[in-house]
Length: 261
Image (tube, rainbow, N blue to C red; front, side, top):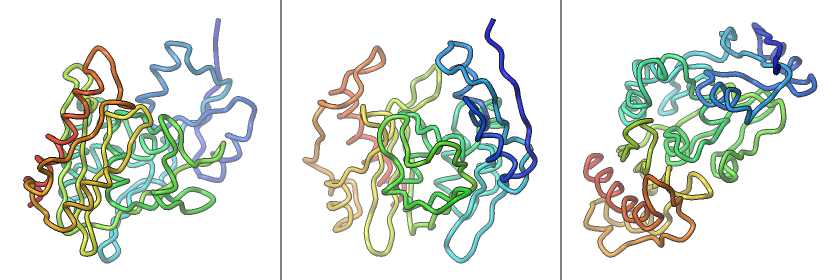
């Protein structure tokens, strides 16, 4: 019968040391890992829980940059990120109360699920991912479905997000899971607009460059008229075809711009 040990370090340094053991894996909120363990898709010998590490929890602000500890739960982001309303609203609509009170922003960013909400927020918001070793610019961080620039044993300790002038996240939910069938985060800064899409692409979260260029010149839904994306490379499953998801990207981007404006 499969079994594993659980370690509960109190500091990042102790967690890093524990993750150096053979077949050790970090456990954040467990919202992805626990189902993976049940399905035997992951079989670590040691789980290193990050839940007791206070130094990676909490929200602070320095000027227009919001810093959220990697161990901060979705519910805490929803309540504490009031200076960034679009981000707080995103967190408040992840899953259900049980998920929001267990799942963490660091776990979501580290896992990079193709239908997760936070990756879109981070990518649109020019985030910087802070780890126990370094800081990683968000454009260098996501590297495909479930893949990031994190090294083995590296821990997301915080996410830094410059607060935009205007922003909105619009999500077309898969009703049972409340994951994004398609989610679009639009963020307007003084020097341009960023549009990040989750839930749609086989490669995971991505930026829609054509929409960014159009919206940087005219921040209105009308600027998106005539812009489309191909269905090739989009997720095609029982919830929707690639062509359907491509269509939804345009629809949700227009909604996000209208809501932000």
